[in-house]
Each structure stands twice: as structure tokens, then as C-alpha cells.
Length: 247
Image (cartoon, rainbow, N blue to C red; front, top):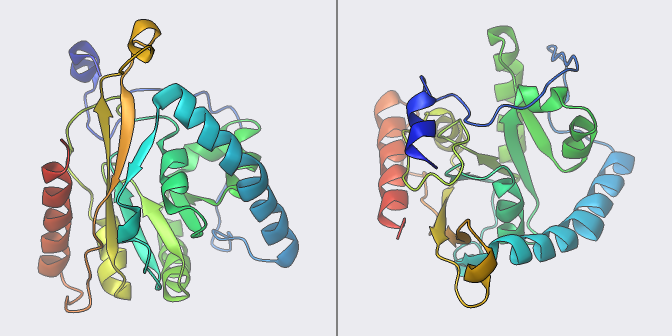
């Protein structure tokens, strides 16, 4: 990301790219964050694995020459888990999804994403979970995600919160993802999205860098207590591991 764009950001929680969000979207205390039902599950899986997965695998390879390293680190992942990554591309969630293959994963996202026409329906089917902005809705959100993790689901968080395209450092983390991990005794899977110069014929016509996704070894939380100190220590440990694997 260009330095002048960084200087324009007053708050590191602020997205560099702004999206038009003309639609209304209300979350109430009964909102179904992880939609259930066989019909929804069928069409969600059909769209995800039958259409989105193969199309995005080809698209990400063509546009970013996507390389995924460390798949062996999640091969034996049996329980629920939290995955975290830096947030540096509009569609880096597609790369996370491809990294997990046929392991079912859900993606937390800004509530505003559900205010974008057409996108709101599509991302719901593709397992997006809106993070509520109102404090009154937080309790139900937390409860639903706790249940999902205990039932074996994998949930992805962007602990940096905001999208900074092509930023090449790991920014500060929020503690939410690590709170969920400690509370539910599930491992954290750190994922680092890095950039590399295009090679061969690609460097002739490609201005932006290509992408490598690195899946790091899970960090387990079985011995951690649900207190501020252990949650903070986990957050720092994950952050440090991701920083070490930036290159």
C-alpha cells in the first residue's frame, strides 16, 4: 500500500477502501448468525464447493499466482478452531477458504458488508457472519459463536479489523478472536498472507505483486485460563509467530 494512503488513515481500524452500503440491515437479538436447515446447507455447499471454490481457485491462480504453504499443519485438525490472518486484499477470504479445502470454515465480516446489494445474499450463502456494531447484540453473537466452536466449526477472524490493501506488515490485533479461542479451548491457526514479485512473463504485464498464503502450526489453548493475562499472552504469541513468517 502506498505511504500516502497510510497517512490518510486517521485510525488503524479504518478500512482504506470504502464500499457503497445503500441497503438497510438490522441485526436483532434473534438473528441467526450461522444459519441452520438442510435446504440452506444444501444450497450453501452447492454454491461454495460446486461454483465458488473451482472458479476462485482458477481466478486466484491467474490474478495472484496464488501459492499455499503449510496445508499439512491443518491436516489433522479435528476440533473447532479459530483461524486468523492479516487483512490485505479485498478477496483474501477466498484464499483462506482455498487453504482449508474441504474443511468447512465460516468468515466473520463487517456488518456493513450485508448492506451491499447482491453481495449480502451471496456472502450469507458462502458462510459469512456479520459482526454486530450495537452492544445490545453482542451477547447473542458471542453465544452463537461459542456454540459453533463447541460443535466443531472453524471460524475465521481478521484481528487487525480493517482492510489495508497490500500492506506488508502485521498490524496491532484486537483480542476478540483470542477470547473465543481461550473460552472454548480451541486452537488458533495463524495464517500469513505475504507478497512476492511476479516472475517470468507475469512481470511484463503485472504491476501488483503475487501472493503466498502460509498456514502456520496451530497454537493450542488447553492449558490457558479464561483471564485477561492468558488471552493477552495468546494474542501476542500469535502476533509474534505471524511477524516471524512474513518473509
